[in-house]
Length: 116
Image (cartoon, rainbow, N blue to C red):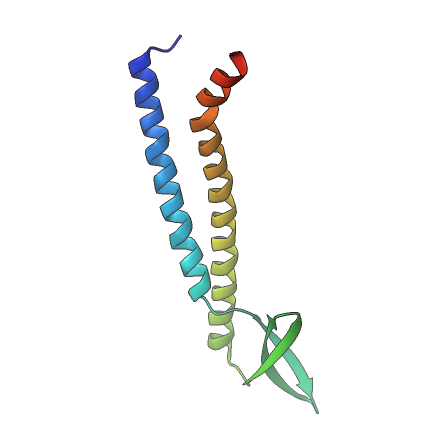
């Protein structure tokens, strides 16, 4: 069985990790909000290739004309998309971690109330 002092140390470490995870979650959410939304959609019109930025505005789709983009500009948009997907993954993982830590820190309270 774990001693009282060990339990306090473990609880302290979990609490610090919870605070750190919450801070990281806010950082990634802000970074995600700062990234440009949407995807580049190529459209061929009269044999010419044009690019549009497609994104949702409420319930409808919006297509903003971007002109003819070269490979460098297209790569930049693709990099932003990859970064956005990575940040979304980080946010999802952090939310799971926060939920786990919150449950772990409150487990002693549940055990005391259920055993009384």
